[in-house]
Length: 555
Image 1: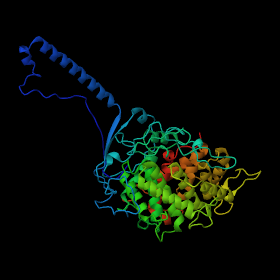
Image 2: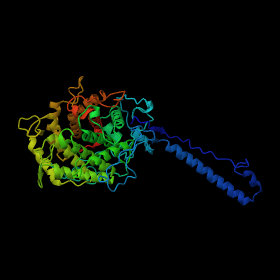
Image 3: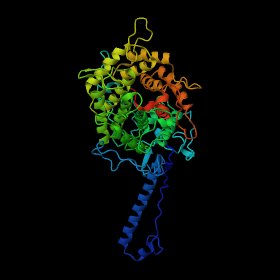
Image 4: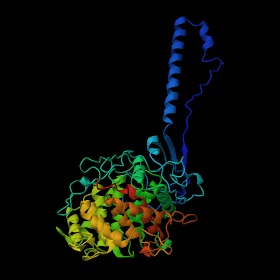
């Protein structure tokens, strides 16, 4: 999955052991037995019989274990960054660390043996192989393309984690305890709120965040319309992001064609790695995750906001995107200083930035306490949802304020309305396609029923169209595609099949192949001038991770 020269090999064992002969050249000293008493000879031969039976059993056991694919991942030669010391994070930001050392150059050797059951590997054949080749590793240019390559470098999850509401899953019953008058939420977090999804904390990530690793990830790709092409696309995008991360952990937006938006694109890039199951503790890219997290902690102010002076579009977008990434990192890795930082970010979102006070809260915009808009508020709502899932404390009044704002900007349907409402404006009631996608996604994740949202989803797909990458990029809109993809995936049905086929073609056909841009997407289309190649690539990758990033809300 990386341009790094990670070595993957199938471990083979013929099950045979070579027994060294004794120094006198006799076979286990049998010649000497001719002079021994009969009971000594009996003991020796019975011992030999037991030894032979043990060897046969060991051989059979080894042969049986070879039916599964065993892979060793060696990151010793990872060239993600040069051998430079990462700047230390200010000690005031990092307390009670459970890391042995600060994150440094990811050339340190990490090896893990992963066993993938053959029934998982043989579930189905996927087509549409996306050809992006790492010239240094021609044998492993795609997780699917090479039959000897392991599927996901980040695995150690539960192979049965693919079902909605199953282990590590999310279901409608697991939504947080907020909702509209007709669609109240009912439970705790994603996967575990009502006992339907327990999750397994084995260092590979919190079970509540989708089926991001293990056999569950592959099953989700197959079940929901992904392919070799989409997974190769994720593989290549993460490789590009890893290669172009700065040594201190952030991504330089201006360097790759954007404006001053380092905090936002670092948050987007971190989300892309987390979405594929990489955490601060496990995964081929765990060092990239560590360094991104440490950088965000290093720029976090005392009041909890993630922001650098001079960043484009004020505080709102930057903090909300970074807070979403940090909440997921905290929930998946459970590193104490990450959890502490993420909680500070949540507190800033709800107590410093959100409009209103106490029970009279509204939503969010660029600056603290400003009249809200739905574009910025969408990122804040999703970040608070992830924080709730991660076990962080979120002021319940904040969700109430979000619901009141959604009600305010919703355009209701009338008797002759073919879509039945659930359309949303920017700051007032309206029916813009992008904000309608954002509004319906927020409703989904706060507990609204699928049937109550169907009209709104059909509206933005009909009016805004499905993803299409035309010749000059004029129809490209990764911001709309990101929210639309998450929302239509949750809605499911024929509308998802239509959207998904268009999405796969748009992204896999236009991902760069070869050269320094290999695996990235050109910054063309709406808003790409702000986030550049880094943001465009991170958002494209997140779209292709939709099959397993969050499990289906509706059964």
